[in-house]
Image (cartoon, rainbow, N blue to C red; front, side, top):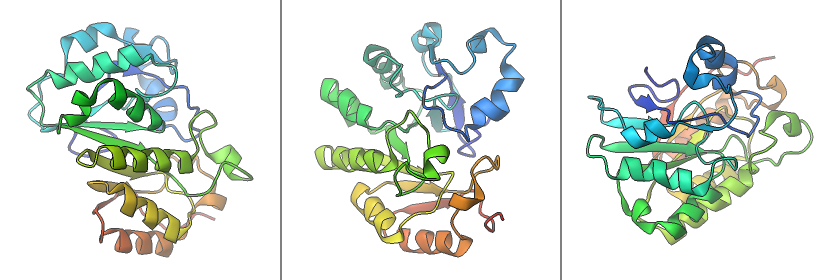
Length: 243
């Protein structure tokens, strides 16, 4: 199955589900209704470890990039640390894939994993990603737009900056999707300090995000223009602000 987030990248889902409660979750709204009849997805969005898949290891694909867990968040609080390490170990010992893309809204767990298993962080095939939709806190209108059970965006940014400081050679990326309104200077500062290898920028493709919190297209273009000084910018869905 082609990845819905990163074009040209295959996916592998030995973990499924998440407890963040993102109101715009594409897996919950778009994919789960199609696959709910399959035994693997019998638990729906409840965080579930499929141990047999972890044991089997990453599948053999011709593509060099593998997005590890796009039908959930492998680093959400409901997954046990030992299970996350087993998942990463399964990738670590594999020789089939050149790049393993990880993505979470809970990057403080990267620091937890790194403290226990620094050898995993030293594996240059891992690209550690974080979703940061906005610079604003979860108050006012953002209280209903941001994941209620995930760390706030500023907390995620701080964790990624700390991760960069402690492990300066680690490969990282950011997903600014679905992008919400932001403070331009603060977002650029975060990007500059995190030093991601690349970023993705895009609007909500499911129209679940309120137009009230969407930024103007010109502002997004300005962000991408300046971010090119620090990283590679990959635009996703770009459009005029919905009314």
